[in-house]
Structure formats: C-alpha cells, structure tokens
Length: 281
DNA sequence: AATTGTGACAACCGCACATTC
DNA sequence: TGAATGTGCGGTTGTCACAAT
Image 1 (tube, rainbow, N blue to C red):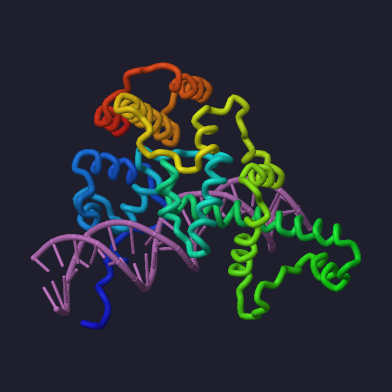
Image 2 (image 1 turned 90 degrees about the horizontal axis):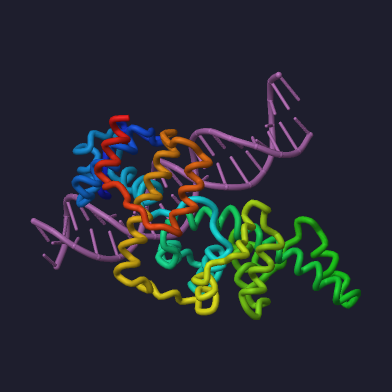
C-alpha cells in the first residue's frame, strides 16, 4: 500500500454532480430517522450512490432545515465584511458562518467572492479616483496611473503578489476609510445591484439591536421563543422543499402564508409525516 | 438565431485536525 | 504512542442561466 490515506470512497462507484430530488428525499428521510452519526456509512445505509462527504456537504449546505434561503440582507453582508476584516485576510468562513445563523460557510464564501469583494473593489477604485481628483495636480504621475482602467494600487511594491491577494490587501486597507459601518452600508447600497438592495423600511427592531451592538447574543431567545421559532423554521423549510419539488398549491398563496407565519402561531406538521407525504406524493 | 462571455452558485477535492482503537 | 479513520474547512472547479455580440 502506498503513502497517504486511502480515498474516502471508490470514485468509480459513486455518483457525482448535481443531486436529484429523489436523492435529496432519501438523504433527508434517512437523517431524520437515524441521524448522521457516520457520514461514511450513511450513503450505503440510505441507499445512495454517493460519497459520504458529498452527503454531508449536501445536508449542511442545502438540506438542513435551519438554513436560510435567498439573498443576503444588508446586515448579513455587513457582518461578513466586518468579520472578514476582524479575522484578517486568512479566510475563516466557518467562524463567520457561526455568527450568521442559517448561513453556511460555503454560501458566505461564495457571496464574498462573487459580490462583496467585487463591490468593495469597485468602491476602492471609485474612492481612489475621487482622492486623486481632490488632490488636483499635486501628483500627476500617480493620478495618471490610477485613472488607467486596469491600474491597481501597489502595496509593498512586490510584483509577485497575485491580483487576488492584492485585492484582499486593498479591501483590508479600505476599512480604514470608514469611521463606522453605517458608511459601509451606504457604500454597499451605492454599488450593489438593485435586487440585492432590499432594505426594508419597516426594519425589524432586532436588526437595529444588531447594528448597535455587533455581538448579537446567541441565546437571546427565551426557551418558549426558541421552540416556536424552531417550529416556524421547520414549517418554512417544508414549504421551501415543497416549492422546490413543485408540490406547492399556489405561489402567491404560499407567499402570503409565509408572510403570515411571523404573525400567527400555527401548528406545524410533524417532520416525519411531512416526509411521508412528500415521498408518497 | 447562434455563438460567446460572464456571473452565480452548487459541488468536489485535498489537506489538516480530532478522535478512536 | 502511533496508525487508522472521521470530520471540518478552504480553495477550486463545473455547470447552468442569462446577457452581449
């Protein structure tokens, strides 16, 4: 036997690529019944031709009932940026995820690379141009460099720094511009895409609390609240699942129901019953 | 209408650490 | 104590949808 550890599974015998609805249901129902004590043996026991790691990833990043779906809120984006700054340039997506209930490290990582980083970079360029303009002709050479479309500021003067790394450094330094994060919120709003800019004017008081004190207490809910929110989450999760499987009755009706969820207590079906309904559908 | 480019996100890979025996 | 195994994590890739040409 050669060096190194054995692969977690025989890649020629496992299915790869996107998960089907059937596979999702198998995984969900198995985990609900038996939990996930051993990811390696889980796929075999659940009748899935998947690698254990793949099952774990699918569950954690997509099927878990307590996951939030949809666009990140402005507050979540701010949190990511703040934490990314406070943890330094080395990526700590899991730590950030732990501060954002319902969001996964993978999701946060994607948002950072596809949205936030880009937006901050564009702000840097914008800011650099403004700065250069305000300085007028004090330093023509510098100004001409920055006005070039592909120009990027040099930190440390090393040519070996990759574009990605350079962006990170720039982004890190950008935070020094901000006196507080309300300014950062403004920047996000300024450069963000319209669909990511949903800032509710009837913003939840909790959000203001969150914005005032960055460290949101993890167990701020009373036991009763916690139980109710957990039921709500499960209920929401099933509605989402039904929606994705095309089993919902009517979109607008469902949206209305989801809207009402926050306002009224309604008994949620047991998880297992709902699985059976879905599977037998 | 067809082709190409780009963005977004799900999924995979491999390494490192923790745990078990 | 060290090897084997399980799990978590970050980086990277693959795929799909949509826009631009």
